[in-house]
Image (cartoon, rainbow, N blue to C red; front, side, top):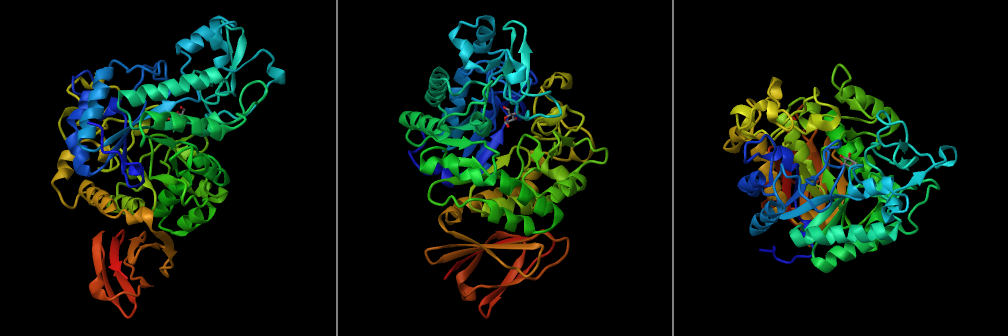
Length: 545
Ligand code: GLC
């Protein structure tokens, strides 16, 4: 069943990001699979999310967790078949849960047939799918996105006898997205996955896609033109399909990605991400004020996809310089081993907040009460931690911890056969942190996140109303308010480790206010509301004005 047609569904959705490989293994081979996700749809439904973003599941040598795609139309057979993918879409749609898949068009894997043909035959049409130079001296240079892993953006290929251009790892040659034939391939791939049941796409690396590329450092003449065309293609297939951009670009450029309402529907808000997660961690609200100042106003033509953490490193570069140094120290592990690519920590939220479930819940409350489409990272809702013994960003990509049985209930395979090992040591071990323990406990992190997801759903005003930050009189208490057609939602978050009692103006009679969700107390009198907040308390208050 296709979910009810609803052009604005993404505006009120809560998205859940998961990797099929590490979510749930149904056949005991140590790799998560589509049937495993189907088996856990009850859990996702109960949590209240209405969209799953599936990270890449295509055939791939997995040298970058699947962001090195070797075949855009296939499914890694350890994860299932195309029919399994279709079944997941159908079963999810039965519950009004939509599916976004991740599509990587900035580059392919060097194993992709296009690249193999391109390197073997310079006369092949595929040669111009990529970017080459035989004159390194004269070639355009730019910074590689993984500066401590790669020497630059050019790598020599023996078969071609030339160097090819890559902004990411050397095994991810950049596609020449300016080539009309490549653009046609992109459109065909988009159509293909909509036909299989997808409701939209996370477009990976949308910023590098439109950067200067190749020998002459050529940019797309009209980058938004390509994105608009991609959106037109998916909308022609399914009228309410959406495109979500991953583009960690400078704040002043972000507004362009929406193409005046004709390109991306959603854009990850990396600026808010780092300021919010940092602010909650260091118990200070100034970063949220700063984020608000530097972000463009996108009202009327686009919406942010907001998040606390994702499956990559927690990139700090959008903070002021001195703050980056502080965040490196403050959140890093003692050995400095969590620091990567000269810009971020390969840690999960629970590591950064010292396993404090009150603080993690409060951060989720803030995320879910701010304007935007919240995107949750699988495992954060129960407070999973990172495994720094794994290479690079795999540290934050360990299997979901379902219960305290072997392999955390993720798989019945021999632990040695798991795609990534389960966290089985220390305070984040599956014995201490798992879904089963938290599911029936109303005070657990999971139950709190679940209540917040439902509260978000019940309040579409969060994205329809007018958002303002309210001065709380305390640098560690953040208050914001959303007004819409005679109602107001007032949300307060105490970042401090101590009790706080902020008083803010609120011209409403006591009887007209209702607590939506939250742990703190309040009383309304004389045109103001006083909040009674223990450390990490939050309250959402609704009022008829
Ligand atoms: C995105 C992905 C990241 C990947 C990169 C290259 O940033 O989130 O995991 O390494 O693109 O595809």
